Length: 97
Image 1 (cartoon, rainbow, N blue to C red):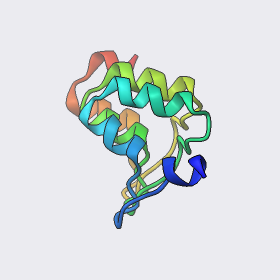
Image 2 (image 1 turned 90 degrees about the vertical axis):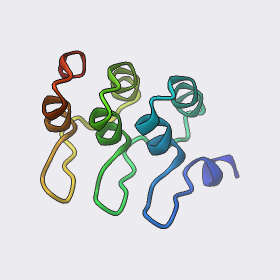
Image 3 (image 1 turned 135 degrees about the vertical axis):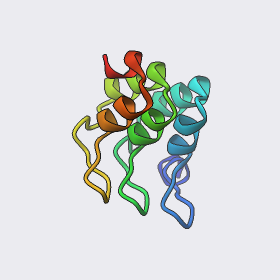
Image 4 (image 1 turned 120 degrees about the horizontal axis):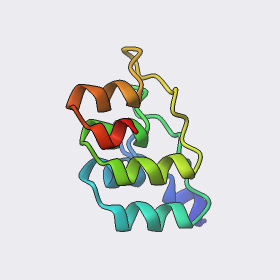
């Protein structure tokens, strides 16, 4: 039951982990990751993962947490962009490391 709820997505395919990553809520990201049942590589309707969303918003600490949890660093969205490309585009030096 928990697995179903923690990975539920909205109409755009976005999960709680994606939203928490995008707004920079490290506490929520860490909580979701601690459950061990969260799909860290789930993709939304534009094939973005939580890692993409964190990179777009320059959230280096969340990027590290997601990568430790097994996020695919080479996942590409519908335009062929990786999270690394988003981090570079924002000038987020911490995120690039």
